[in-house]
Length: 310
Image 1: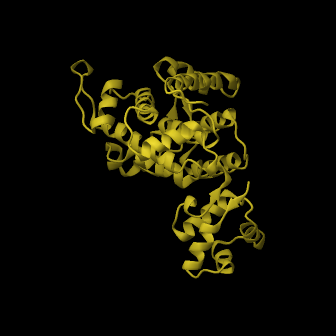
Image 2: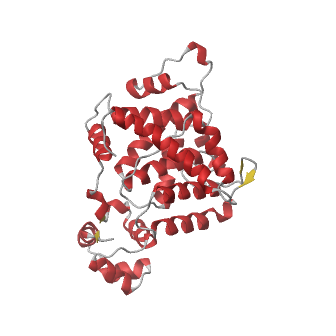
């Protein structure tokens, strides 16, 4: 993969930081610096080190060759988002993604209520719906913001920083944010069990996440199956105290768009199959994969309505 590092060199020039000082300060080899000069792809770890050293996002340092390879869907999503177009595919994507992802995690908001929040930034509750928590409302609003964040950084490689930022966006202004041990925007501090299965211990989460991301990013041309596999492995680690399912599905949304594929959405009809797919994945990967393909078919129906090619 060819990479344009002009932005990095401009920042270094403005801050009067020679490449030799950069190499010494972040602890990389001369071979790595040579890759930067040639425009060769360097490791994700190196890019993260440089971004932390300069206090910027990776996208502010480099441009990847995929950035110009936008599908009709991605072009439309970005155009409608940036121009605040109502009633289009971006509008519907926001509503159905937020509703489906939050609903399977227990949100009491209806589809119409979710739509009303997106369209008016206010809420009128259905009398038949009963009580709805403030967290359900805030997490719905947060999900809209998280989708926008994913679209803004769609071509950036996955990093721990992006994943943690995503968790922070989803969980801000909720009761979880008031709990010191919950670690909103950071990895869990307490062990958790999901579906009767133990997840990665908090002490091992950072190591396992680095390993997962590095292995994933080393595969340059990812297909649908690779992204579903990452989704499974992410959920198996379960790096956050809560919100892992929503974070994982948003990552899948971003990565499928990044690699020119159609996203999937999991609704109530697919929920049981989806969870069973995680339980059976080690023995039969096809179950989760088929469920995600079924979720992709549901989203394709929306694209067909808007006459978008995929």
